[in-house]
Image 1 (cartoon, helix red, strand yellow):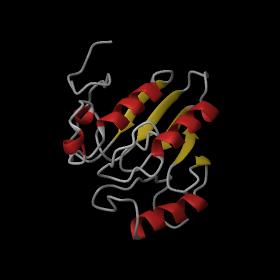
Image 2 (image 1 turned 90 degrees about the vertical axis):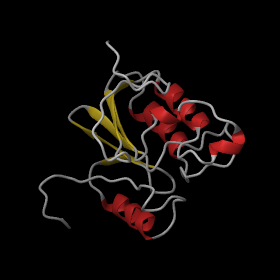
Image 3 (image 1 turned 30 degrees about the vertical axis):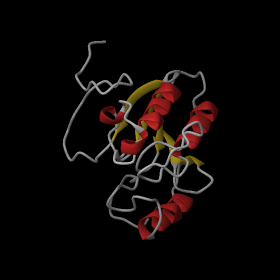
Length: 170
């Protein structure tokens, strides 16, 4: 193909690439998504996508998972319909199969799970309402993990929909 690696590479955009979801990086990801092998689903805008590998369903969701229709306030970053895509994708490609799911998004979520006043929410990278809607969306599924890179650190924890990032037994 167009690289030297012997395995497929997948990517999502981050805040240094395109905070509002426009420009060259977004255009190039959309173009690559059209020719990626093994993709089982693409969002209508071509940016978000999913694939299956070794019995696991992976979903690439961009900078943050958001645009919950029930949240009407302005957000800091453009989620570009990632939450509606995730809801549809999981329902259609995982359903009640019990297959594990791995999610990929740039911004970490736990610290944005606490409600803040509307006048301060646009300072947060992830809208707390979208974070809660994301958590609710995942409840029926067997989430094996979520990968994010924004913090530039390695951190493992179980997210229970709150800001508590301490690993929990279970």
